[in-house]
Image (tube, rainbow, N blue to C red; front, side, top):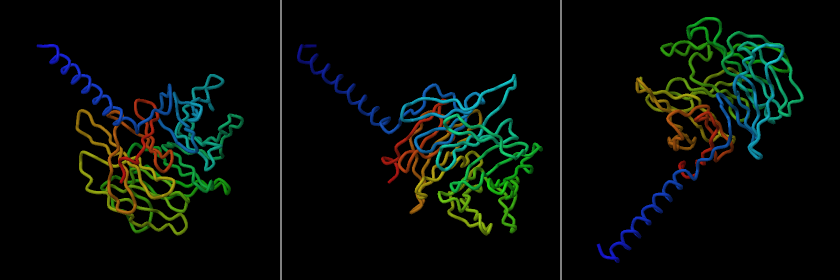
Length: 305
């Protein structure tokens, strides 16, 4: 090989290396790791803050200065299990479950911690309403079957508990009583007037005022090997982020999708790893999810048209 051929070969290799690096950077330019040393299971995201359950304690992460603050810890030799954190509308307080039966409230600055006057067995999720008036409580009850799962609204100001419905098996029929019978996840709409939930392959909404249930859109055929779950609504109320789980038997993987309310087209976002969960919205153009025990943000502008 002569000198010119060697120079051309080296130039070609350098060009290919640079091209590959640029392509990889383009693929990951819209993905950013937000938390550090997270070890996160569950979280909520609001106002540039993340509240998370880490090792059964509640922590708040400030995205701006990338720092953690611990809100709860074990005391007097007791081993508390603090989970399912949810921000208040202003993100200055959080509620969370303790030992899956108590509901506690803490200030984000760590100066306030108190138990709410409610004790309910088997708490499996909490969501503070955008109006600040209610806390949505999902409960697995004392039984082991899905028939024991229930939904409640706890009125903070009236200290009252309202049952919304019971989650039956997926073969059950949504009865005319307007109770919410089937759901894989349930969230508040941005103004707090409705609850949005996924009923198998149909997106529905439940009115807090008159308890009526209406269909929003058909999500597409739900097969035996995949399911929609863990969805959230964007702050402007026009986009829906979902986790779409593929069960392949020995293993499975999750993909994050965004639907738009104008056409309800489905757009797949890039995956960080095989398993992504706990999707949230950082703002109208960024979706967050938990992967590899950390919180990541994805800029959706290049994927949602």
